Image (cartoon, rainbow, N blue to C red):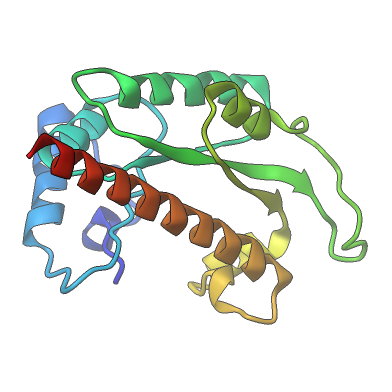
Length: 192
């Protein structure tokens, strides 16, 4: 199931919400949607450390955060701020790992070639620096945006080689969630 505020707004109109309005909408989305029985609930937050992040982390039980960055220094600096927020004592959300988006460009006609347009290895270096798992690289490939624009995420196209990159990343995230949950269960047993 997928839900988004944008399903309920006019795509041609801006939505100028202040912090309290965004917080109320987030709570409503979490509490009022009929999610059914879930294995995972993935919430895609915008970059930053604002009202929406604070509302989500302080209102709902969060297993962990996955930080998505691109390899260049300016994006890594923003990612570090987000990581710092999740690690604050008042928030304390475990970091499951780091994903590097737009890691390299691969043209359709030369699928074996990799062009590092935004730099190389920034996400991996950040993961190593923070001693957290590096969950994968997502290349800059036109079929990813074409699939999204068509309303069919590339991961659903088994014939697309990019599907494997997303599937492998999702498996790594699920593995980290399982590790995090096991650690939390062990901590609960020790404290009881």
